[in-house]
Image (cartoon, rainbow, N blue to C red):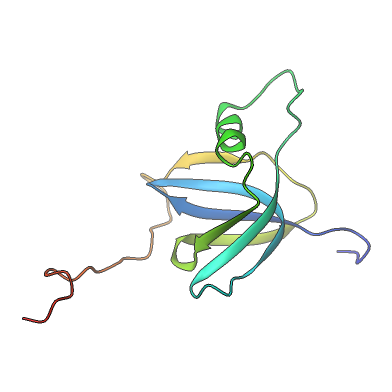
Length: 112
């Protein structure tokens, strides 16, 4: 990519049993341990004749959000792309991607 162009990133991550695919201009490792920070979300033009319902839901959900902290274990993939695409939500059921397993202590972590 040319240095004169501003980078655009496609971020895919798990959120409540769904896979979110968003586009943003700024992504970096957070000072908050174990998180990735995402800023400057990019959504399609809202004055289009045909509006994708999942993109509209994402636009509404992230409206007014300046920065998101996404846990590293939820991130599936981050790509640097030449231009933004359609932000969308897909169901994680039946997908080829499985979230990283998390083991919780049975007794809440208390010594026995």
